[in-house]
Image (cartoon, rainbow, N blue to C red; front, side, top):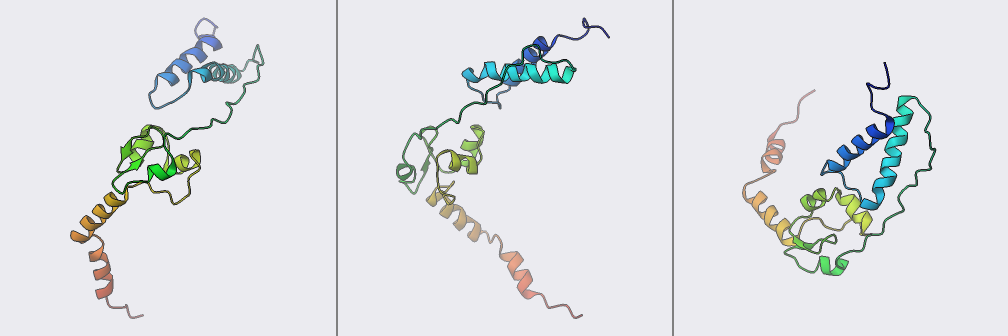
Length: 154
């Protein structure tokens, strides 16, 4: 096989980087793109079996500090909604909002130094869902069935 059939490592790394950054699920700051391209080039070169022509040290991105949009007290100030620390907007539940930002509830709590019991659902919404579940009898059939069974004889 000749070199003409395969793009060089730089072209391949560039194409892979463009594809990666074009995916809307991958979030990368503009300042991090050159370091990402260098890392991609080094990886492609390594996988191709050739030694990297310019052995540059790829620096890891420094720990980002995130400034919350609101205080913890203000985010939990209402029973009807929780205010997001990412954008300062009110939500009844934060899970979907966090997933659009590529975060899990644990990562969100860690990012803003929140306690492990910081709620992800507004208090009134949680109570409303609980009432609805009790009204339709969720969970009662299983308990009633278990309570009505006779113990098996051995």
